[in-house]
Image (cartoon, rainbow, N blue to C red; front, top):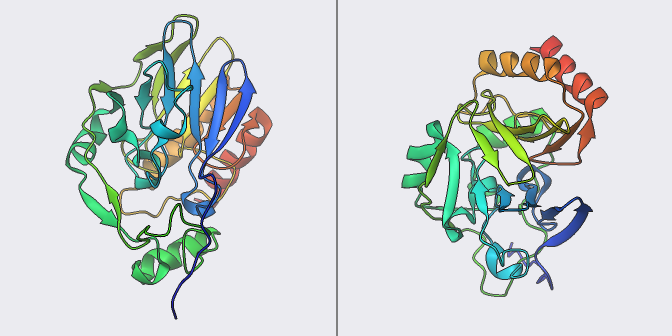
Length: 257
């Protein structure tokens, strides 16, 4: 059966949250792949955390937001977070992501039937609904849903535990938070207790059975997050949340594991 999807008028949704922070999302991407893209305007420089699927040019969609070239950080090297990474000149990631990002050169299908049955079952078991098409609309008529390219984006800066990202008026410490992937990192602002967590923790079905996951490392990460003085989490997927919800998510998974 032929698949006919509507054409989206606007691909991204932009939501200013105050204090220089903007959330960008791709509403037509299925939840399992719908990454939160965070833009933070600093006094001396701007920060972009993750870049979404790369279906539509992120830079071209927001010329005013990117009038000052940001430092772009990949919280980990999964395709739903690095699709537009190649568009930006300053790219930072954990050292463990370097080889993946530098050598990325593939086409991805967004049709369920092209995915391995084991992967689909694992995602369903985690709690995701996996529709036939992982998009509910396309950006234009000629878009090939079975051929979404992923381009190489070698990091220009390698990050490790304890490195500081300085925006002039705001400073973030790099936290290595392995488990979901070996290269997973978060950015923690001690002054406000704000954590940009990537996929280390979010308020949705966590994925810990991927080929690059490590459950033992994930348990250590969860215990670390419980102990940190975190007040607010801006995650890689789904809604932001506070300390009480973080404790609930982390303890639930530790008990399950």
